Length: 377
Image (cartoon, rainbow, N blue to C red; front, top):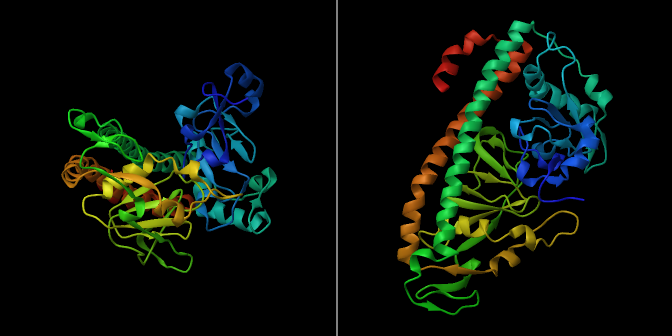
């Protein structure tokens, strides 16, 4: 039934923190999709997960709220989620509805309302409709939605730029270390992984990095240190687990989500972090792991899983030091811009998350934050 072209099917697992990742969606024939127009999505639709985990697992929490982006228009919504559109746009705007439901007030309401087992929670459409809130007048709604949207747009622009830069770095990696483009005129030797340039070698991954387990974060206080799970940054805390550059590898969950970090961080117990054993291999190791298709090495039964034993004994190509140094230098410019954009996004996210509950509740008015907003944007 599923195919490589056609209409996207959006599952809860295809949602990001705020949007939809179309690259992970299944597809069905577009003609067949016409039979399911009742679950067709429009840009700006609000999606709420009706099945998920309990807090504080924010990436898959029941009641998770995302907004449908323009590129997902026409996709079909799968089960375990509902789509919300305003009945009267003169009473409540669609953009304001999204931010209203992104507020922690709704999240905590769902946490107390949901039912289920220790591992899975669920809510009904009735539960969602029973959520009570104070509704600002329409001009105030528009003002709130406008400024929060501007912040989100800036965040999305930075993410798009980062994606482009990451693709450029990966293209260079593949040209050098998969196709061996710059080295074709030199001598090649046989190895366990096929022909490789002379002077290079095949080693075990454990010779490049030490793989360490993450730890539980639930008892940590709030702060400025990012906590990474397999879905990305989950929260910010007051302690770090490691303060050097590292490549983070999911131990469970979405095994393909590998992260490169250059600041103090905490990684959860379902996430490995790495300590480099050699110089000038950080970015090489990151791209190497991104190309290894770790999801195909899953050893889990119910939940996708990796082990240190499996990772440590992977055969990988180790180029000579001069090549590693040159590659590191060439991609560093890309990653410096990526990290600058990421830091800006963290500032924007904190501003948005500070503004959101206060604006929604009427505790403050926009003019009280106007200077800070203008400076940031």
